[in-house]
Image 1 (cartoon, helix red, strand yellow):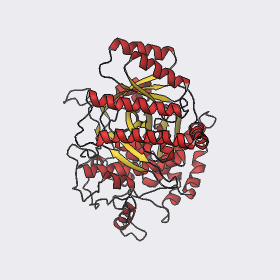
Image 2: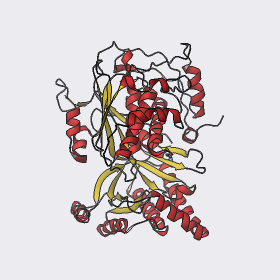
Image 3: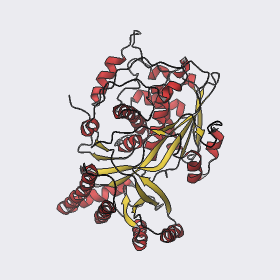
Image 4: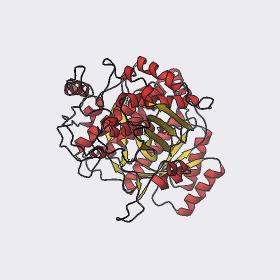
Length: 519
């Protein structure tokens, strides 16, 4: 049987895993938490094992046997908890990837955060509150189309592999989306987000699921090609899977195989959310948001998913991300390259092949068994590849005067290597920073960016993927005092990127699922 490209290329196979004390063990054990660990078949028989085996093998994964979990005594409400997932940038290979070549995408430290507040048993509602989008809507749990999603011919389980949406299930959501953000200028975006949320909630939950408020904040610019929607979908997927207690939470001695299984489970359902939002996503954005670090991906046949190879040894690198604030159309930029290829096939194919070689050169550097991180020499090598890649993209005609101005300012300051990222024609540029850049030079560059209307973010490239903060407590007290709980009001009132980062940003208490890092 052919294995999934993700697993075949990653060279990993999950094995029977030991049972461990996890985040899920701390959630209350009562019927309101919905799906059981062993879903029952039509006749009340536990058929999860056979179904899981079949569907897992479809994705090249043999999931471990699911022993009955020992759980703590029930409590009336689960503590508030938080999950977080990163955005992404294309480091190498944009546009070439459209024509069957390799591309490399990596996580960035701009992240989405989801706060889950469980309500009392008497409150039978769920609320999606996405403050930064202006989306805030509440649904009555008991009136949702459970009969459709739990029909024996439709029902999916937490371990299911879902590669396409069920049109009947999508249609059943329409009456429940009619009241979302009426009259709001971004209503289409709101409806897509709400659709993803409801599809996941109904797929993973049950009519007995507890009422809850799902509050989202994000530091990722929306619509800039940075994977903001995938980051949100990974947050929703992981939060809902944690609520139904089907994830082994991250812990220091977690075997890589176990972590890999959890990441894949989160990734599968995040992809379903991306299907709701984008229709035909590549799966790359959610894979990076779930697993972090970086991936290599290719797509030879657009009727099939891309092959995705995680790069768990990708180093963390200092990056300057600059948003041109110039609107652009991905379709327009892709069409430019296709038209150029039609007019000059040999020359264009040579440029695309050269971009492919740039990506493969970076991959070889990272996968070298002797690679132990970025020295000054390897940083310069990586930076040179970034500069070369940008030159090829300019040759394809997908840059923009605003992008070239960013490159010009960075080159004049001589603080790093710059390229556009994503479709081009606007959007964002990335600069790999030299470690010796002087503070006054960087400050002058920041002033120039501000004066010319650019937004800039200092980020880390290649960091962690999805993480959990359980319970959602600020580590601002003594060991005896504990910390201050992050409540919904504090979270909503955090101002801007810096305000969100100061309140809930990556720090003490956060735990992450980690891929294996062996070569």
